Amino acid sequence: MIAKTNLQKEFRIMSNYATINPATGERVAEFPTLTEDEVQDVLKRSFTEYRNWRSTPLAERAAVLTRVAELHRERSEELAALLTLEMGKPIAEARGEVALVASIYAYYADNAERFLRDEPLEISGPGSALVRTEPIGPLVGIMPWNFPYYQVARFAAPNIVLGNTVILKHSRNCPQSALAIEAVFRDAGLPADVYINAFATSGQIATMIADPRVQGVSLTGSEKAGSAVGEIAGRHMKKYVLELGGSDPFIVLPDADLDKAVAGAVAGRMYNGGQACTASKRFIIVGDIYDEFLTRYTEAMTKIAPGDPTDTKTTFGPLSSQASVEEIAELVQDAVSKGATAVSGGGAPNDSGAYYPATVLTGVTPEMRAYSEEIFGPAAVVYRVDSPEAAVDLANDSPFGLSSSIYSADVAAARQLADQLETGMVWINSISRSAPDLPFGGVKRSGVGRELAQYGINEFSNKKLIRIPAV
Image 1 (cartoon, rainbow, N blue to C red):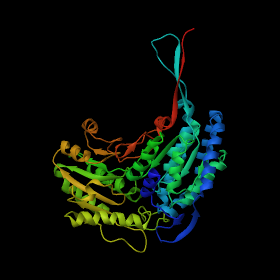
Image 2 (cartoon, helix red, strand yellow):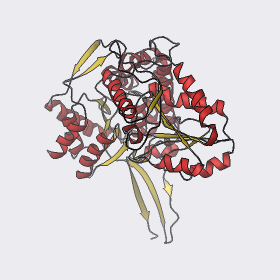
Image 3 (cartoon, one colour):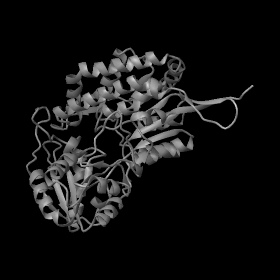
Image 4 (cartoon, one colour):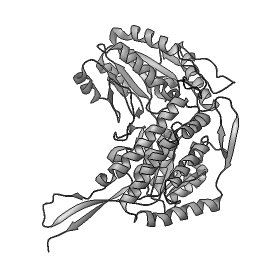
């Protein structure tokens, strides 16, 4: 009961799952949560189907994912429209997310045979030995609202093709997106109980994680939610993957191309309204280029105006909810009240929709929340340091360690600097991006485990040794 209570504290409790248009505040649709009997039925169905699905030939499992990818492309417009409706993603970015998701399912369909091939071992004794990659059983996935399809695909694609079954709890503010994912799987020919959408409460998720039929849990979300999930998973000896927050540093060295650096800084901070764990959040400028960078960056950020997310020309829409706006406003106000300067943006939340202006903060110091907390929205913090060494020290002075960027004309020097950064990913002369064949994950409070590429298919697998001594 203790673990269940802690988990409830870390997830926002609402009576139902609901679509609330963040651009207007309109409550569009509502869906009830599971009953306790339905929770047990979900667990039973997932466990029973696992026995069948793991025995299904790999080629058939891969063929289903190929069809899932095709359906995402065929239904791109309707899937994208749901993202815009439920979490305010500009329609052009929503279409981009659907395309990325299709590529993830296709990637695992195309590469599963190679990833799951037996691995012969070179051994000192007589005979032979190999490692076989096998599924482990039903898994629980807990996914966020900022990339409703992409986050699910990173978890579901490798595990379904591996032979695991999936119970998926999506965020409470994107239930129609959750149902659309399940519908795609059904229409692609996936047996109904291989992937089960569960409109579950946090207490019910705690029950599922603790159930002996469930073998693992993956969460993408806040560090507090990750700590709660890790606690209950550890108590019940379950494997877990946690993809948590980030406060990604963006280092600009004196020899950097400022045109590229400023453009990258804008895109890195403002993509998806800044609501991304890998968004660039702390801009660390080395030496005398600071003033010019700040001037040009502030000017560019000031020109970004929020608009109607259904308009194809809009690049910056509302945040996901009014609560998200209030959280950003509190962090900015805390910094300003303690001496920081909002050189652009800031201001009070907008009552007519979940909008908040693109904001640039300077003069942020350790006693301010913005120094150490993740700013999950369109507010950037810009620092000046005197040397690359000082840039590394500031970049690493964070509880997070997800991704990072370094801009420099000297790629070799940037690579040496990359070796010193305490992050799971480093991009040189680019913002952080995602692709099916690139591993994704961080260190420190940014999480545990990796997703995507071959790493993603190995997290919830049994690496079984088969040893045959000489007779």
